Length: 152
Image (cartoon, rainbow, N blue to C red; front, side, top):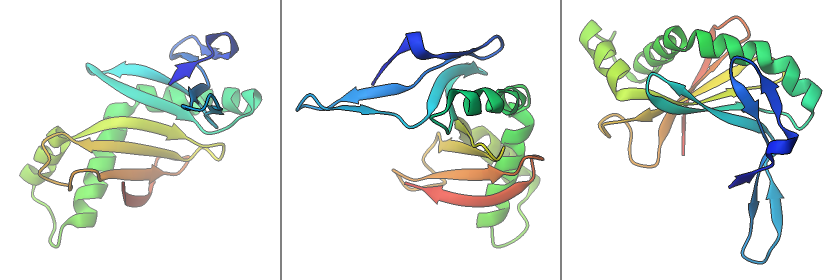
């Protein structure tokens, strides 16, 4: 993937969101239908995605992106607790939640025009989800968990 850095949307706290594109083997160019950037959170590269083609809409999502950036630890914990509760037959123990917090690491943050956020997590040890699958948690605009899914 390459990016058009001259066409980015800059945020002082986060950096510059750009639209990436891919060149296929036949020379055809495919543009991403979102703006994105990578941020360093706790020593990990985390992708931040704003789902819109419209620069003004992306600018409108910047406060939500900054909020998630600032509150990533609390949101990560809420996401992991939701995942553990969703996939446990019984109430999880504190130890199970602590293990999951260590093992399920934040990989991506997706923000939508309705201020919903999806956190994509990676199973860093491979013990919780089959290879090629990862959990995702959707939050509403008030940081309430709306849905837990498994993506592939």
